[in-house]
Length: 360
Image 1: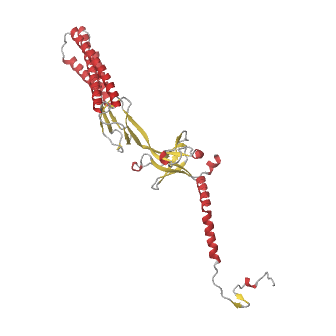
Image 2: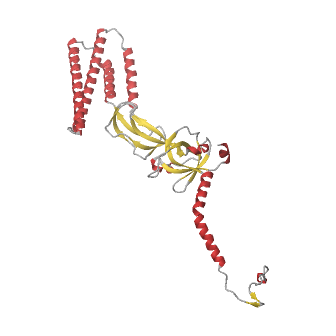
Image 3: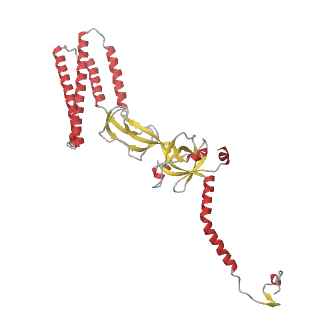
């Protein structure tokens, strides 16, 4: 058999000894594309992994939350809550009344000062009597004993309440009786002090009382100023986030009443992987993406100085709450209050920056 390395069919594959032979359409190209498709499907996971690695190199993401600057409103003076005039989620303007309180001690002091001022103007000197003072001192001693007894009784009721042997009504009654006894004691002290002052005035009739009159005016004004601090107003344009008290509750000085969110100071609190800290320098711009697809430009406020655990809301059920860099970002453009929701989750994306990579 003679082998030819240069076949004439190369130029005329459809002719055999000069005669044209028709052939069906070739099937091999179709088979070739099937192999290409199989190859693509087999290599898809590898391509996806490479795309993820490339994306993580080009764009760094961080879980974030829209945050309002918190403004606590605390009790400036001890007293009881009369009314809370706002609700959670309500927007308030500066100066809006949030809550009002009252203080029985300040009210009692105001009445005594006004009574003393009126007595100086209209009342005639009344002879002093040692017996009257002695009776008032005895009443004061008795009032102290009543306060001590009510305090001891309240502690017993509290103990029984914790053991389940007393009701909440009995506990509230004991607290009310103690408050009443303390109020009576304070009133007795004020009355005794006023009577002693009057006796001193009567014992020195030639002594001028103008100085005392001025002191009464100053003290009365101070009492009124303190009472004005029982009305709590909003210091900022904000939103009520939490209310910690209810009407009738007794508060100590400094105890929280409610929490406001400052609508003029809205920022994003993001949790960034510590390995990407080179992206979190001050002035670095990023994009915050909301769940509905909206995108807003943000900028890093300052270099992060703290770490925090990733919130459980963004951690998978079996994931670990790792320590992340706490990055604060400000919005480049003002945000409408209608678009502000405290703790609203967003995704913060830091675009690729070659200088950051080289510098890192």
